[in-house]
Image (cartoon, rainbow, N blue to C red; front, side):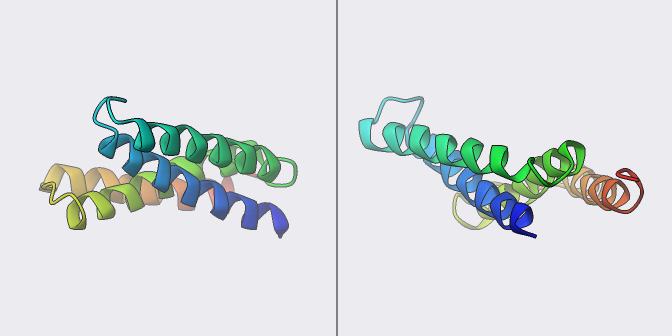
Length: 107
């Protein structure tokens, strides 16, 4: 169970790092750049802790998939970026893939 907590922390670290990456404007602003590097270090540290008990394929699919979905939601509301029908279909397929992997891929 603790592995899933670590995985959740890793996903939060990824969300923070990705949004700070946007604010850093190509690493041209010092504080967001440093924040990005710290957040990604934090993220990968907790991802590494999670894969001690969570199967790697499930951990990575969840980390990448949920990170992508949550980043998309944040980008729509915080950065006012558009999302079209193809993007929505892609997100649905990612969710389906994570669900299939969780339900059937780790046996």
